[in-house]
Each structure stands twice: as structure tokens, then as C-alpha cells.
Image 1: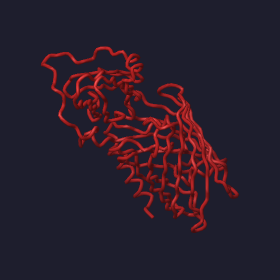
Image 2: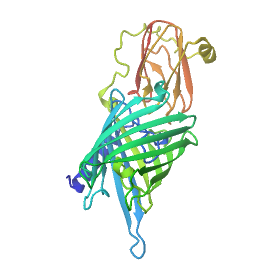
Image 3: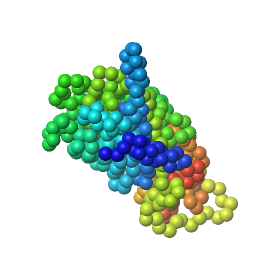
Image 4: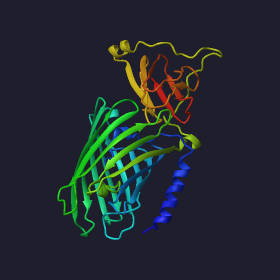
Length: 369
């Protein structure tokens, strides 16, 4: 067991290291408070989320208690993520001062990559329960709504080798680009005395011109672990969650597209950037339109292979303005505001590296054959 004070110091240090970097955060607008929603982050990005939930006791004491849960995680290649949750208090085992959950998550299917649904699996070890827990998440986006369901297999903290099962469901509804409302419920299938149906509700906010998100929440759960999110209590806790990310490529460099070949011949000195308007409707009708975007401070996809004559349209899904700027200046979108789009038609074979001028660690490549 790691002492609470030492653990807290380590987590505060991790937060301090993350603060200088503006990077792709997990958008809380895509998941309810007590469900991961299959989030796997961006490869090469570290994430620090802190969740504080407060409860107050009855008179005459009227004491306010705070049980924070800290999340430190890393986005890895192949749509995988690994990290830990640390809660400063545990309700799983008597006299257990804190709770750690070490976990790894993989997204098998992603809707924004052409799949009909999001499908992800998670496995982890909870030190308070002294066992392995797992979750399967299924989600689907329908316009401004995202619905999430999950099934969980949990170790029984009171009986070695025993398993318990839980189910959960919820969703988010986008009110605007910067606001969403969310809620969820979860229950153990064999609730014991004192174990309630778990629930949460939240108002999620994307902070304009930053990659950070903030959630104001109410819930009857204690810790943001699979065990904690499956057990409700009689008391209601109010609190907030805030995300702080750190994109490593901002300092160490990244070849987001990978495998870059020779770039096209640059235009003559003084030639204007190719920013002429493109008939997107005509390209779509002709079947020569490909869609891409910016989400969580990254181009998605980061690497595209298209045929000559293909029009690529980028949509900015971030709360910050971005550009699509070729390394050889053969095209430049200028600032694309949140929610805006920009398109370019590739008429010459070659490998076109590009980046975002305000955020040069955002890189991508289009290979035209």
C-alpha cells in the first residue's frame, strides 16, 4: 500500500508537469460522469484528469468531506490506452485508506473510423478489491446524442475468487459546441444490503480556445473506478471534473503520418497559397470526396492515401481555431474556426505533409497516387 500523502505528492507533480502543455484532452462532452465511453485518447498524449466529489454530514457537525479521484493515463498506438485511477478513500474494504485501479483499454471499433458503433474493452487490477475487473463498452453517436452501455465483471472484495456482475447505461446530449448534459445509471446484479443503484448527472463544458473540459456533477458514487462506479450510496455527492492533457510531440517531435516520402516540388517563390474555393457538392456527387477533421488537438486521420483528383474536406471539431498548412506552402487553409470546414483538391501525385500553424505539433500527411 502506498501512503496517501506520498501518492498525493506524486500526482500533484504529474499535474504540474502537464500544466505547461496544451494538448488533446478527453472531451467530457462525449461521455457521462460514471462511464468511460470507450475513451482511448490520442497516441503520444498524456492525460491528467481530476475528479472531486463533496458530501456534507447532518447537523450538528455539518462537515464537508471531499473524496477526489485522480486519473493519469497515456494514449498508445493501435487505439490503446493505459493508466491508473487513484482515489483518496475507498468504500470497498473496511479500514482501507485509498484505492488504486491500474487499467488498460482498447477500442476494437470506432464510429469515426467508419464502424457502425464504438466498441471497447478494459481490464484492470483494483488493489482494494485485490482482484481483476473488466468492462465492455458499446456506444453510438446519433446526431448530437451519444448513447453508452457497459457490462462489468468485478472481483468481490469480501470473498476471494468470487465474481460479481454489473450493468450500466447513459448518454450525453450536445446543447451546443461548448455545452452538453449527461447522465447514467449502473447497478450490481446482486446488490447486497446498503448497496444502491449508482447514478450521476452532469453539465459538461468545453472551455473555448483551450483543449480543456470541465464537468459539474452530482452522483451517489464514491470513486471513479469500475468498482466505485458500480456501487451507489444513500448520500449525494456534488463536485467537478477537469482535464489537463500533455502532447509529447510538442517537445519531442512527431511524424504523425509516418512513412513520409519526398514532398511535391514547392511552388515558385512568391506564388500564392492554393486556397481557391472547392465545389464540395460536386466532388461528393462524383465520389471523389474524402472527409477528415481535427479533434482533440490532432488531425484524424493523420495519414490519408487518395487518388489524383480527390477532394479532401477537413472539419474542425475542436474548440480552438486550426489551419491545414502544407509544409511546402502549396496550400493553406488559413484559420478554420470551431465548427468550420475547408477543402482542397489534390491534382498532382506526391506526398503532402501538412500541419497546423498555431499548433505545429499537429501534423498529418496526404499521399496522392
